Length: 159
Image (cartoon, rainbow, N blue to C red; front, side, top):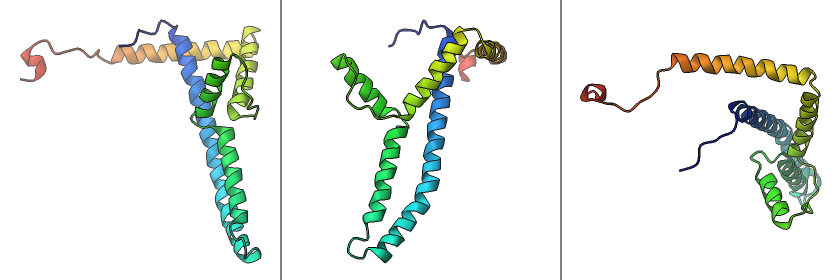
């Protein structure tokens, strides 16, 4: 059994919002990749058949390499980022893999927003307004939803 989370509910909520936004953005990038790679793969395959009879697969395999590199960049589920963090933690140093990843871009954007928030600018006002709105929604849902409880009697169990 895990220990209850003692973090502020608003902090937990903002972590979820950040993770959702990053995931949806990365999934959208992958959808755009698919829209570009499907016709590119077809064109590359046809071009290989027409212009390179001795190695018809060569153009298509180049498209596959591009797709693979893009997958590494996007890292939709964060496996590479988790692996890099684990390696950096174990070695107490940065990993040798300095390739730019989508997570790096999102981290930079997040850092800019956090800096703006700490300066008390528009970001802080927007965050506070969103927090207040989400608090109201969560309270309304909590008030209108009966709490689940274990049945006490045979009547509650439906006999």
